[in-house]
Length: 470
Image (cartoon, rainbow, N blue to C red; front, side, top):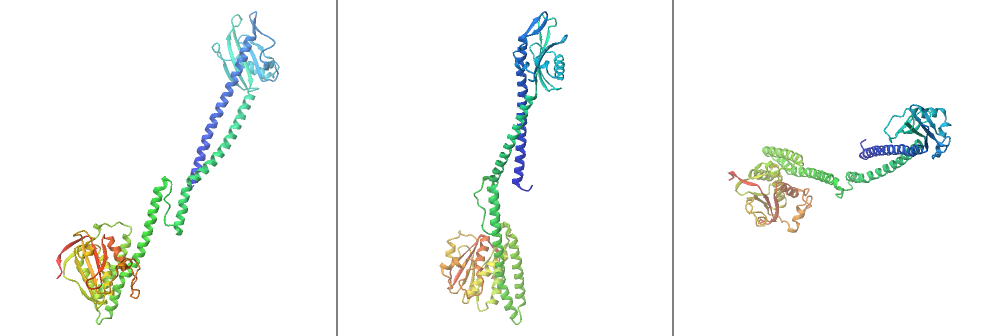
């Protein structure tokens, strides 16, 4: 019974059978009562005819040989008449009763003499059983001039023709209702099949989703299913985003570990090894792994700005410069003095953002890399795009060959690389854009005064720190 269609079919058929049974029972009862009532109505004119043919003779009633009702004259006609009074018993029998079976005569005679008294003009109708099942109509009248004025007129008719008519009607009713039940059941099955078609279509579309043949469910559905389809589409979209985020998280993890691993390799080959630097890189790698795992865990959650801590920018930049100076010993790093500023961002996210941008500057620059921090007006091109005095602008410049403005969009795409000879996966700047977008920041690439590229990073939530770096 786990099928909705089967449940609806059984319930509908049960209601249909019950309804037709009640209707059939009501019709059969109405027809039976009308037949019985009709039998009484047919006997009433016979009693009136008997009264009309009766004549008073010396205080007694006599009847003419011919009675207006032919069936009373015919043997075996099934109609019988009897006139009696309570003092003298039977006064007259119809010819059909006189030649009938003695059991029938006794049955009708006993009923005629036991007929209940009633008001004048009131007929008593009874169904009696015995030798023959009969419908009897009786009328007791007061006939003046007779020695016994209370006279009972009793006419009976065999029930068999009426019961046969009722039986035939019952058979026809059952047959017709049975055919009607089959037809209505077929119509209900077809109607339920038509009504359940949208659900089957959704089931087929879900199977296509599982097989990868479609991306979402069709939104053209019955009104009652719109909410379900919309929820399923949101779930499908969410699952697709989950898979994308997980793939990107793995790419970001591999990319983030690349620089610390390179620093570790160079630090180990130093004589003597720079143990504090190595320990710092190991700690950073552990932090990267923990951070990426926490990012995966936060994918399904909506993180607000209040969930992110305040992180001081200066120490993070110094840590990165110290680590990169080992891998790129030939580069000169410039980090002018500034009032230290804190950003509302996860520290690991800030390390990933600045680490990728600084490593690109070292990789593609000639010798010089400069990091500068200012308000939102730090660069003319970016200042025109940001609200006055909003957040922090951090600029990373190099003295490399630079990037054509027409190539900026492709550089920011995940997996895109302009220099196929240099090592890398081409996801660094794309990851920077994603991380900045998560904290409502932005990035812009412009020509640098050093001759290479100036990468402007805008962080919307910033505040000055009390400590100042000298």
